[in-house]
Length: 82
Image 1 (tube, rainbow, N blue to C red):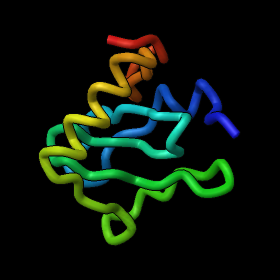
Image 2: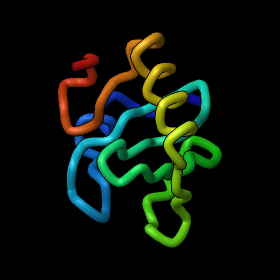
Image 3: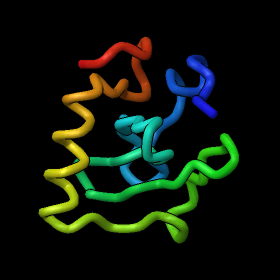
């Protein structure tokens, strides 16, 4: 279930308050600066730092390549890829 466009526009990382990459296909919001993945469960973003998981360099590279290939939107924007 994709996130609502308005929600994508307003979500921010709870840790550094910056934008997140939304990967609908993996049901995650990803902070590339901190390399943290926030899960989306049943269409609801789980934005608790304790629920986030860390990505190592290989996983970070995979996520960013997939985000680029899919033109994944960034949060805190108008929903269009940057």
